[in-house]
Length: 208
Length: 208
Image 1 (cartoon, rainbow over the protein chains, first blue to last red):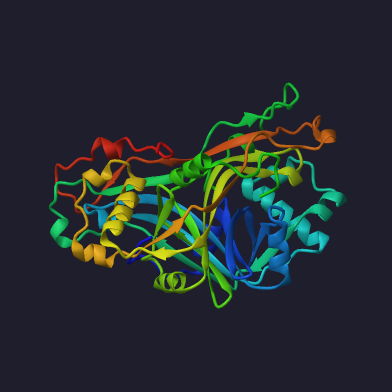
Image 2: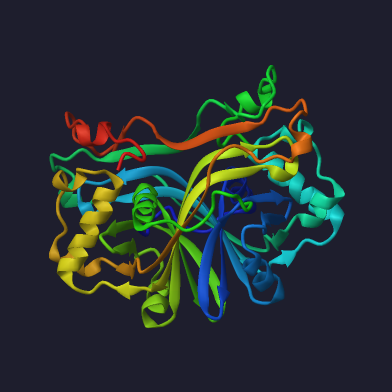
């Protein structure tokens, strides 16, 4: 994305809000000098961001054995349509977390992470579902990173065109973007008569 | 994200469709062993994926001087609500491109990349806007990666609960997710009487 005046560092409140609103994180780690970046579910609890480790066992081994990682969460807010091709851009908010990833081993902390993942997806869901049993906790791969080295960047506002382009007969402005939810789709195996709760039907993106 | 039966490798058509639908890519590179992942605008042209390099000059220097990179595009399709906390997940499609990033130096190729970025945001927009001039082409930082080492992963379908949980009195299913566009917002500097074209007002996410 292009440099923009509004970019820069932000306070922890801003960082937390971006982490909390984003439904997916991108995690980077390096194996023998080759960087990889994979999507993962994440959830913040205080000064810690947890993420799911089950997607890539190689990732787990690498991250926990050695080497720093980077976790990035990006929200798209708008497409920025300028009068010139060159000044087209995106409005976005992003957070980058640097540091060492730590494997969560303590069952009590694993439970905290699983609750955070579940509540992250749908606030209130934790109280509706069957809680993890001992076997599931043993099978849960969660990693944690501290927010000590977290920073935010953002672009906001209208396009920034060159002065001499402002009178061109070209519409300029923003197309706002946001995540939207469709109507819930029941599992085909759902027994007859079970309907989604208000927790499910009332879910809205960014409303957390 | 959790392992799921539907995950795996896909053909180039699937890879291209994911790259073309995604509005943002996450690019990973390593500096002195520390991986970084940053969001960037990308656009595919045939067997090449271009991405914007202006956001991080350090990135440019690093990527073009040495070392492999990784570019990942992720689309969120649904939240997967299981009867147990443990089996909650996301339906998604993602592409990972590995390889060396190449700085685009040829002005003709830079023009191709800028057209691709512009058309990627809003198909048809290139014909409406002022085209890049020589100075802008010189100021454009674009990088290219080959799709030779590209792969796709996805999860789709309903939640996969344990057999013994199927009769629980808990709703299970999907909440579909997608990007949505709001009404265009005019630049405050727009002269009176210039209205957005059908290219702008008709824009839909994923319709590319």
